[in-house]
Image (cartoon, rainbow over all chains, first blue to last red; front, side):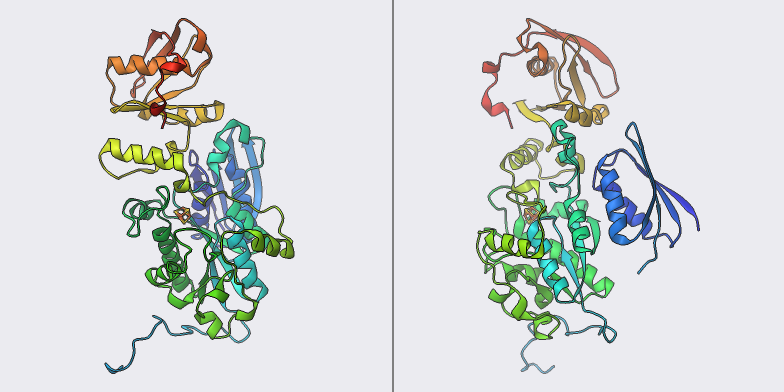
Amino acid sequence: MSHFVLDARYLLCPMPVIRTQNRIAELAPGDTLEVHATDPGALHDIPTWCRVHGHEVVSVTDVDRKISITLRVGKTT
Amino acid sequence: MSPQQPLPVTSMTPARTAPAAGAPRKAVALISGGLDSMLAAKVMLEQGIHVEGLNFYTGFCVEGHTHAIRNHEHAKPKRNNALWTAEQLGIKLHIIEVIEEYKDVVINPKHGYGANLNPCLDCKGFMVRKAREWMEKNGFDFIITGEVLGQRPMSQRRDTLPVVARESGAFDRLLRPLCAKLLPETLPEREGWVDRGKLFDFNGRSRKPQMRLAAQYGFTDYAQPAGGCCFLTNEQYSHKLADLWSTRGSKQYELDDIMLLKVGRHLRPRPNFKLIVGRDEGENNFLEGYRKRFVHLHAISHEGPLVLIDGIVNEGDLELAARLTARFGKGRESESVTLTVTDMQGNSRELRVAPMPANEIPPEWYL
Ligand code: SF4
């Protein structure tokens, strides 16, 4: 189980969620992915995307538009 | 096959891979974020079909960030309607970025444009083709869309719906649950995967049948995009895109170009340049991100917008741009306004100009 970081800063929605989706497709269940973003839409889109795909949102921070969302990859079905 | 035998009307055999006993058939649904595609997917779920959604990001989508750019939208919760739809339906949604591939659809539509620069028929064919490819790769059985016969003047006519099925290569694996009863039987109906009797016969521009069905399913907070799912149906947007193409002398664009067309007030005072004027703080912040790629202006003696200059300008053009920039700031009634002009290397200098009176700005400058 490994930890990965994805830089999606300065991308406008829906690009951060698309990058997250494509990165997660390469990871294994239990891996964690820390996504950095600046578009506030990511605060909404990434957790929603995780819910519909069964991945876990471990933490969300937003300090002065520096957004960091950590996810744990769920079981692939 | 002997030469006498008729050619098959479909390109595929019924079941490429039969699902395991008891496993449901699988449909991939085009999910736009609007009500129709949501209903179409729900109709399939109600029939026990396994549904997953696809949503395409072309760069022209109305979704998401552009709503967030302008200040007054900040108070509203931002959501991606396609994702929201998927969550309501309890299905997976795959968002596919098609920015590069989609350019050919917009630039060279075989079937031409609709009322504006919307190539709806080519666009539908493109999206259904991408869905077919996805279906084949992922072992799904058929494709569904929320199309309604007669609802859109270009892509949803009786004579154009078959064009989409044919050109996408989906043929009779393309099912439109909301108007299927008005169309020839498709493979999923013929094979008994779905019950044609429980599909619909929605027809025409009235939204009432959809709203009734939405109420029946208990959907309330759905998105109702006016006009279409993308900016290309917007007259003003298309006008700006046409201006971009004609002034550059070729029908090309990059993602940044089409993003910038969504933001700010655009004025073309001279053929060689246009101005992009932020209309509020949100847009100014957005335009800030482009400072290194455009000569830009902003007032320092008064509050005012950030203005990007798109094009090559001489000293006279710069003064004109400065007078216009002053016009759109708080110094508009002052005798003079001081501004800074900054080039792409970041070198700044000051200019002092008289704001241009509103009545001296010809309406045709506004794109
Ligand atoms: S409105 Fe835009 S996204 Fe929708 S079919 Fe037409 S061109 Fe495609």
